Image 1: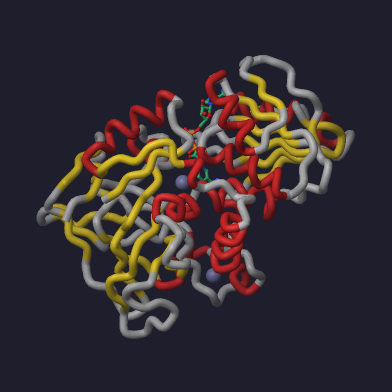
Image 2: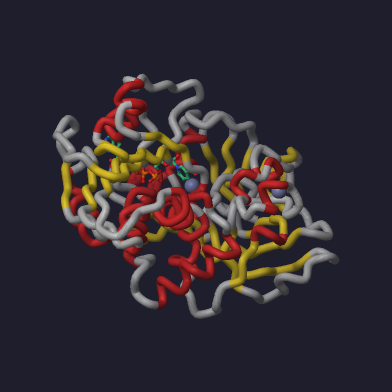
Length: 346
Ligand SMILES: NC(=O)c1ccc[n+]([C@@H]2O[C@H](COP(=O)([O-])OP(=O)(O)OC[C@H]3O[C@@H](n4cnc5c(N)ncnc54)[C@H](O)[C@@H]3O)[C@@H](O)[C@H]2O)c1
Ligand SMILES: [Zn+2]
Ligand SMILES: [Zn+2]
C-alpha cells in the first residue's frame, strides 16, 4: 500500500509499505482522511526527535477493516476517529479520568509496518498517512456514518487539542478574556473552544495579517498581527506556536490572576525566562497541556454533538484536500501560512 514515510532526512511517498494484521486488542482501519498537523512537520524538521523509518500522520478518521479477537468496542464497517492515546485503562491516571497522563500513552512506539523489507515505526500511536493502519481498539472511537471524514479526521488532534485546552485544561468562565498566540490548526480550535466556553474578548495574535479573517470566523473579537504589538491584559493566554519568545509574550499578556496554557512544542531543551515576581505577586500561572487534556471517549462524541449543533466548525477548518502523493505541496502550503488545515486523502 501507499504511505508517507519519514526516512530520517525527509519524507517519501512509498508504495511498498505493509501493515501487519491486528493483534487481539487491536483494530485495522482504512483511512478516509488525515489532517496535516505541525507536529508531523516538526518530525521532518527534527524539532521533534523521532526514529526512522516511520509512517507519519496522527490526525485521522476512517472505516474499521478488521478487529482482533478480543475487540468488542467496534466492528468492521464502523466509522471511527482515531486518537493518539493508547492509554491502559487501569493505572491511577486512567482511573482518575486523565488518560493524557497515563504512562502507557506516551513513547510506546511499535513497528507495525514494513517499508520494503525494513520494519518501520508508527508515529504518535497512529500513522494515518497510509491507506490503512493498525491501532489499539481504545484509540478507535465510533462516529456516525454521515460525518464526512475530512471533517472528522481533524478531531483526532487539532480539535481535541485546541478545544480541549479551552474546555478541559483551562477553566474559562463566561465573560473572561482570552489571548491566543499562533492561529494555525491548534490556535483556531482554542479560539472556538473559548467561544463555546462563553469567553468575552478573544484576542488572536499571529505574525501573518492574512490570518485575521479565519480567526474572526472562529470567534476572535480582536486580531493583532504586529510581532511586538501590545496585547491587553487577559485572564487566559494560549501559546500555540512552540517558540520561547511567544511563551514569554503570552505570559507577559496575563492580567492579575491569569494563566498561560502552553501547547506549542519547541525543539528539545528549549527554555524561557520569566520574572518570578510577575507570577508570585498576583497569582499568575503557567501550565502545559498535552492533547487538550482530552478524554477521547467523552470528548469525541461531544465534538460531534457540537458540530451537529453548528457550534463547532469543522468543515471550515479544511482549507484544501490533497491526494497522498501531494504531501510535499501540503507541507509547503502549511509552511506558507495558507492553511487552517490541509487534509490528505489516501
Ligand atoms: N500540546 C499538544 O498536545 C500539541 C498537539 C498538536 C500540536 N501541538 C503543537 O502546537 C503548535 C501549533 O501547531 P499547528 O498545527 O497549529 O501549527 P500551524 O503551523 O498550523 O500554525 C502555527 C501558527 O503560528 C504562527 N506563528 C509562527 N510564529 C509566530 C509568532 N512568533 N507569533 C505569533 N504567531 C506565530 C504561524 O503564522 C501559524 O499561523 C506546534 O508546535 C505543534 O507541534 C501541540
Ligand atoms: Zn497534532
Ligand atoms: Zn493508564
